[in-house]
Amino acid sequence: MKFKEFYPNTKNYWLETRVVARLGFPVVINHSSLALMQFTDAWIAGRLGSTELAAITPAVALISLLSIFGLEALTGITTHVSQADGRGHHKACGAIAWQGIYLGAAFGLLCLIYWPAASTAFRTLVQSHSENLITLEVSYFQISLLGMAPLMISAAIGNFFTGLGRTTPVMIATLTGVFANVILSYGLTFGYAGLPAMGFAGIAWGTVFATSLQALIMLGMLLLPSRMRMDFGSTKAGFCKKRTGRLIRTGLPIGLHGTMDFLAWGVALVWLISFFGESHLAAHSIMSRCISLSFLPADGLAAAVLTLVGRAVGSRDYLLARRYTRAGFLLIAGWMTTMALIYVILGNFIIRLFTDDPAIVAISQQAILWVAAFQFFDAMNVTYINALTGAGDTVWPSAVNLTLSLVVLLGGGLAMVTFVPAAGSAGIWAVATFYIFCQGMIYFQRWRTRAWQNPRLLV
Image 1 (cartoon, rainbow, N blue to C red):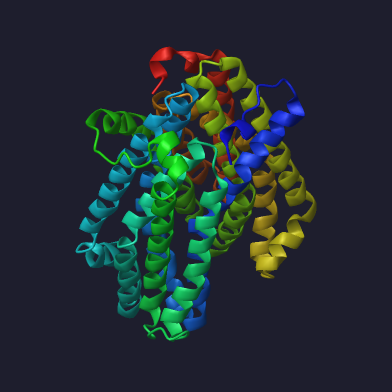
Image 2: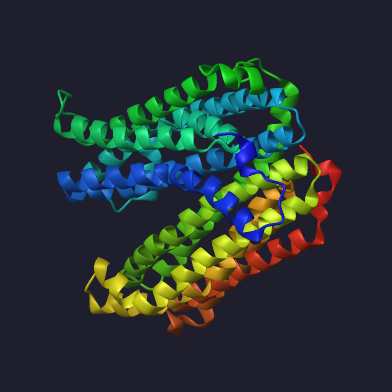
């Protein structure tokens, strides 16, 4: 599908909103693929037993911690490609994609250095786990490292196509990878479909093979169609030090931003809530699923905003960049506000889908109200950080995010644990709500100042 279909120069608000929605829907699927694969792995592990299911959680957490930096940093490819296409430098887009592929592959291979240290790391981090459990965790983690390079290559090519507004082919490749993961992981675990029965290790191997298949499909889409070769130079596979340096300068702050967010929500928040006991941690697990349900679609739509802003900024049409950002925010805020109402009205029903434990239910009923409270500001957060990224303004937001994570979330959370322990985990969720409020308002104000219109930020 041609980008022109997504990029009409119009003042029709409804049409602009449709543009964001049409471009963003396939990206929602693309961004959810890794989570879907990890869900599949957990489901299959549960069929093996409680020990295997327990082994998946910490191993996936460490793999996610490694992968999130690379996946977020490679988002810079979308910024570069969309701006280059907006400036009319179509032939440069393919060369940018290949530099991203090289960087992604290098990062994936670099992650293999953690292979020999995995056993020591798990024994240090989870000392209370049994020897059998640690062995399973190490096995899953080490095998998963082999899939890191294909995962990064897929992300690099996917971001290239997203930057051009061609998101549907990427969605097809992603769904193929997700379905292949179900078949291969299940087959290799239990020995179905003529595949060898490998037990727990088969879960990780199936994901590695499925991710590799997805990467091969992506490479095929990049190399085979003659239209891509002619219009965007997709076969220009030579290494370019200058373009690679630009990608690193743009992507490094984005990667750090994403890693800090992951650490804030996946580590710091869990650590703070753990002070109040297992019931509070169980409630946090339920809230995490609710947050993902509202955030992943919003993140996909925000990626469309990134692409549209990048193209508009590349053509120096700053007014159109602002219009698409406004349309994207209205769409994302509408979705997340609707989810907030659902959490308020149906919160008790949603919680009881996960547990009937009275203690966990009571804690979750408080927490879900805070989750509902920050949905609108999270819409501001995800919209404007992606708009700023599309404009090439990545360093300033990353520095702000680091400061907020340390001062507001971590510092504020520790203050609640120390001085207001009676509030329980509800106090931590209140701090998290204020943290997201600060993010959303600061990024919105940054966008309003139009500092992102500085030509020096053009990548």
